[in-house]
Length: 237
Image (cartoon, one colour):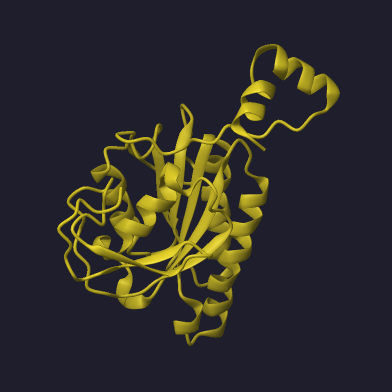
């Protein structure tokens, strides 16, 4: 559906007519604009069990200029949230999943329009313990269920972190920033894997590939990776 239709049925008389006729009213998505903040409202950041990536996620949120608040089962949110980030990398039992549910329930309820939910887990294929591997695999189903329930442009995604990538803010920064940003407006219900690699932090997160050559390896899927070769141009924006 075009933006014109969306604007028509979500405003003024058009909204009234669309409601009475039962016409679909697609959410107005937050789209990327140069200079916009990563989030327009605070992000609730929490940790299940003894995860080590929650603190790294909080640091990334704060470094972006957004506010980070604690996400716990007892937290009462005074206003709307822009995102929920939950570190479940250490979840190993059914009780841990119950703690996850208790943290997520009030936080997801407090999400505003175009809210983001990002769950951090441990790559199941790397886990030898059967119960813990099953719990981590279950995070995908939980994430997809949340994604189906979200409205008003909300998205939910899962980052599976390899063991040697956990707690590393440099590795987590790019995928987490992308999923929290307006650039990911059409990305939801996706489990993505983060592996250990040598990375350097971008000088300008609005133009992360400046000075690099970008090689598109799967144009139909929209995937791309930077080449270490430098290029004299300003780079893609």
